[in-house]
Image (cartoon, rainbow, N blue to C red; front, side, top):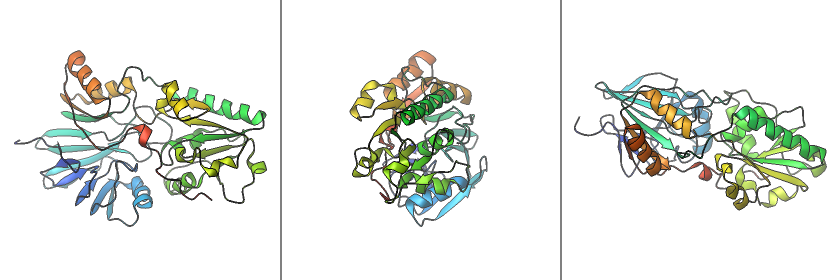
Length: 340
């Protein structure tokens, strides 16, 4: 092969043989999209290909687009190149992309996590020769506590706040993290309320995923009604005029970055719960090992440190590539939607 099966250029990850991009960050003719987060599903492509369950999500975010949905493990061929989508476990309907041409196989993870969160389709190892992996949390310092323990802590926090007459406000990205939180909140403690951005996305997601009953906060929702209950809101709601009406309240954020105390202080959050939709250090290494790959390309995250470890300690042919994908800290809604 005169050039690699997948290359990185100024528009995204490109397969020249098929004339197809994966998660392109500039408008292209045809793009395979791994999941619905804004840094991976950009506006402006002429044709989108994604998992069937992701179709309503990206339509909700991007408007009227030309999009084709594919099932898990469904092979589709473009100019002799075979593509298929496999669960990435990152958020609902998130995919890895398998690319095969003349016996050579590459896999692009998009964003992924290896822990089964009980909502997103469980990460599936895919054998390949070259593995393009994110490494958002590619440092040994990142080691996730099992989510059952984390959610027990979250529910106990809520119950304590309720007993003290305070409302709990839990921040999570409107797509992915918010639904994961909703799935595991203990509704026996109280009522679950949502910010408009979370409620709107959750309604879209409910087409394909079972989630608990929630109540949208409107202009008519009184402070007395909501007192002692829990609100799930996007991080962008923190510090807004919208949030002031719920005093007295206690805030918390669920993120992998809560590993570091300084992250909580910088965001002026009362409580931090370490809960990430990305793989931790061990998750990254186990995922690479399971592929049986020879080459690794590290993108978005601690790329240099991670690739160096793979080369010097584990003997992989590993290198880095720059992308325009954002880390978890930047998956924050850019604006508050539907404040009422």
